[in-house]
Image 1 (cartoon, helix red, strand yellow):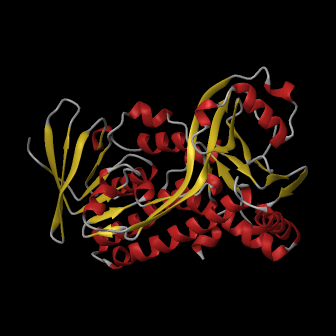
Image 2: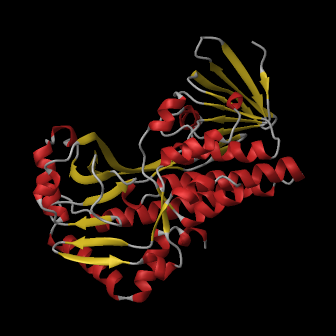
Image 3: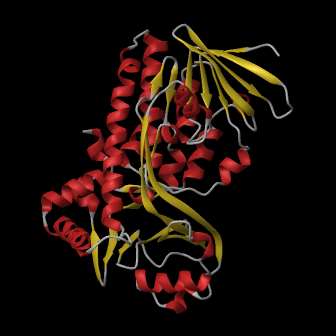
Length: 391
């Protein structure tokens, strides 16, 4: 087939890739998105939906937040259950901004709907970066019907996740990375019942962590800290017993509920040493993974995309390469800020099986410092809402 000749080839139709595509579309800059999964899968894949105010503001400047702003739930605080005590942390009153609850799959659907269907190729296979040089780049892929095609482009946006070809390409080029395993999992369940709480609940106990959140008005999303690799063996009765203990809800509240989805998430971190190589820019989960404790994954990915968009538009509209030149340095700084708070939040929320009384007591002291000292609460709130990452 005749090669496609475009300005930008975007690999991956997750939030990061779609944000870049929407910006290019609005300014008439040619692009294509290559996505290995189906559109139906992307629109229905349940993902967390805590979105920071700075990210919403950036998306608003791009003009893609009409549905989000009309449907999102605004949260100004969360409930902290520390052993048998309960506290409310009102981060919005301290930081000046609420957070937005809007499922990631709905954001993905919104961004897809704003693009011409011809610009996204779903169900592709065998994507390969064949050339990545200062003079340009070539990406090849296979359509669902088996036909193969080349894409000739100025830049590649690698937004294809942790198992995509972008990260793999950088590894083959000798680009280093660092990682950390926190040693436990989250067992996540989707329950077909409305949340009994108006806000998120973070429950910290010596039996393990629990998080209670909502998915719309009819479902609850709940996570339990479990030993590594044990998630599949948990029965409904075991789950209800732990929810009773960790969240302080009566068992009778759960007994009529139906678990419609059950999955396990490993708590780990990963960070590439570089987020650019020649004409390839790597965004989101392809560049960094954070534990879900602070809900920074989606926000970091969209942050990457918004800042890369600024660089691409400066280049194509004004022939100014300055923002592209500083993208990697600034993206790594933001990513490491997200890594630091995610790691800190993981430590604050989880009692690890092998930790002693010293570590356990320090955790309680840290929480009580946040609760009792305005400066500590301000620092925590700014990090929780993402404002600290943009200072």
